[in-house]
Image (tube, rainbow, N blue to C red; front, side, top):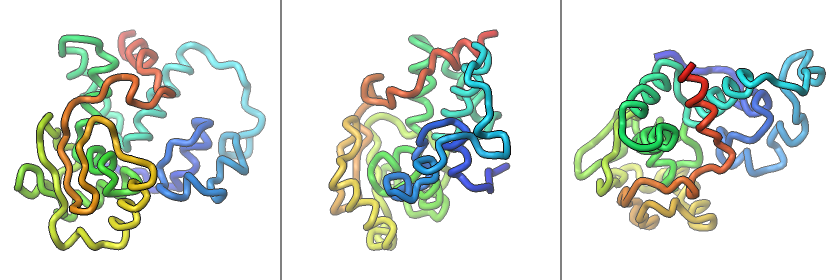
Length: 209
């Protein structure tokens, strides 16, 4: 699968806001967008301020893809599935992405970024309902119990992430026991529990053309 291998901070600068792709660095004064709040490249500071409707829709789709670390093909597949489901397509899309195993591990506070969570999953350090799961896109069902394997519970990065989560709190739709590195995906999040800066309706409009 194709992966983005360039500097992730460029993505935040391109979208003009923090996407929290680098964990603790995003919360420090080392975050590049704090010092250079404009798009990367030699013309970054000279970009036109006015954007067309299509441009706004495209940028919103790109932003959400980058937040969750998805490729275009994956994102289109999620949208197609969301569109077939009953209910609001935009919220369905967010629910499908939020239920990804790598995202759930990140929301549990076991990793400081989704990239780090994806690595934890790939290294077979996560159990879902007692079984090892190593596919980041695995869809976690409501009520599933997740835990890290014993070998991962004392990893320095896991400890750092859990300590940070202990201070900031974990997602409201999950029951998490940070000391034992376990949690339950209790329910799908309500819209007001998710990022208010995501305008999923723009994505629906883009793909509905």
